[in-house]
Image (cartoon, rainbow, N blue to C red; front, top):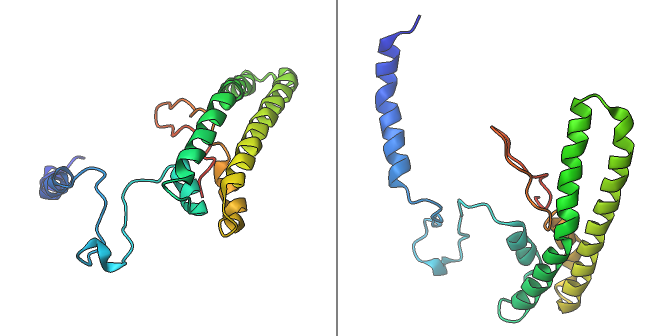
Length: 174
C-alpha cells in the first residue's frame, strides 16, 4: 500500500537536490579549492575527456607545433577509416540479428567480412600512428605504446543508442 507520509517526507529532499542541480553550472570545471590557478594544484573536471584529449595528453604534445599536425593526421585517418568503420557497425548489427534469429550457419561469412573490415581499420590506425610517431620528440616516444592503445576505436562511428543502451564499444577508454 502506498503511504503518502513517506512521499511527503521525501519531497523536501527532492526539492533541495533539484534546486542544487539547477544552480550548478553545467559542465563547469571544479576548482582545486586552492584559490588562484597558479597554485599548482590539479584542476578537477566534471567532463569526460575524449579519446583524442587523452591521446594528446599522454604524448604531451606541444600545442603550437605538434597539435595542429596531429589533428591533421587524425582527421585524414578518420576520413580514410569511415567506410571500414561503417561496414563494421553494419556487420555487428547483422551478427546480432542472425544470433537473435537463431541462424548460426549464416554467421560465418559475416564474421569473415567483419574480420576484413577490422583489419582495414587496424591498418588505418597503424599508418596514422606511424605518422604521429614521426612528429614526436625523443622524450615523448616512451609514451607511444600507451597512446597507441588509446587510439583503439577512435575512428569508428558510435553505435546507435537504444532505450537504456549506451552505444559504442568502449574503445579508446582507459
